[in-house]
Length: 251
Length: 294
Ligand SMILES: Nc1ncnc2c1ncn2[C@@H]1O[C@H](COP(=O)(O)OP(=O)(O)OP(=O)(O)O)[C@@H](O)[C@H]1O
Ligand SMILES: [Mg+2]
Image (cartoon, rainbow over all chains, first blue to last red; front, top):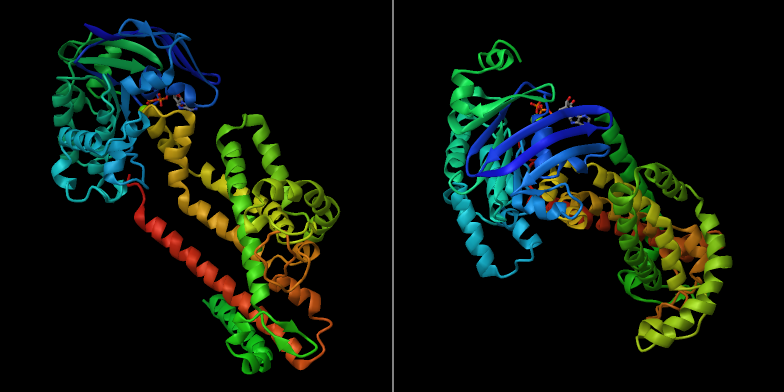
């Protein structure tokens, strides 16, 4: 089953042509890794999928992205709705510093109008458990979100994203600012999440892509060079440039 | 280090010379000076309460009006306005801060006061007249006029500082909210206002400082009568105005030293307000301890 199908996607920053005719199809409840050298358009690509690209001044998009068969760029679609169904975790942990740990997780729920304390409590606990953070914070839910370590903050951001029950989760290099132990925890988490979620993860780390993903796509200079099963990409890449990149001979 | 020391020394010197000059009044009236409201240069009886009251009420009124408007302006300029009008509009607002206060005063006398007397005060008394705040004769000049003039004078300060504070909010905060499915307004509320609370407090305090110390424009529109009246239509007097108005004609030694004592009170009042503000800022920023770690 394909969850997201990208057709002829182009993205621009004023006159920079950042993505050039991308076609890709993302399978449901699988992990798809996006790899490629810095500046090749990985972040831009996933930010097109939750319609976050367009909030940058002078940024433009053309082409189609079908989400459950419907084009998210058609004029009938509300981007707010899309962003609730397609969550995102950023490269740098970005909890809201004035909100408590509890309120950080509940933020999206409150936006959706959920008010009952019982409901909120339940979801906050459940998602913090899913994000493997509950045991570390259950006694200080009222502490500020930024009183946590970097890795904990990132898991808090994951919990915040999970709380609104998205169907797809986009990760933009979620571990690049973290130590190896926190990284391992988050990889473990991603592995568990794919049972219920479709996941797209940008990563600079080849081993990480190999460990967590089912499919891998290799981007270069705004183009999709190769896309396939992770195993195939890493053992028998079809394109010379892919091979060069994964064997560390460039980028 | 040396500069810090010399600034402290200068402040202490200032306090010393003011207190010595105020000594006759301090010795004569003691604490009564703060809590009595007779101001009679002929009989040489002086109490500063009407001026303290006038300063506090006119400044509070100014904040009440200016803060919401300034935040609205700042949010519009930082978040909502089309790119091409942001710069010119911000410039225009900063320009307002540069207008000499005597000009505001003139405008207050010839423009605002008559307008309030003929249009606004009758309206308020008709619909809100059951409140003691809006009862009594319409003079035009008075506490309400002073509060409005002050609010107009501090709007540029509060709004331009708040705007800069909003612009300093990292874009990853806005994106965090947007990616959660927040609308534009929700993003502003969740990511921008929360993050910049401390800075906005700072802006408000600066505005308050300006309102408390403002002399010329207030003197021209407040009516200059040392009385305490619940009605905002009634004339009043502020600490800064009474010093400016009566200093040159203060003949008696006690009269002069009473005015100086008001100056001392004004000085400590600003100090206390700053202290409270710092405490609040400290509390707010303490809650959001540390930066986001990277
Ligand atoms: N806000 C922006 N304004 C203008 N150009 C931008 C902006 N953001 C990115 N770009 C350009 O778009 C291209 C793709 O950037 P993108 O951030 O998607 O790369 P990336 O693959 O995520 O890189 P990295 O691995 O360093 O995160 C780059 O050439 C970059 O210079
Ligand atoms: Mg990137």
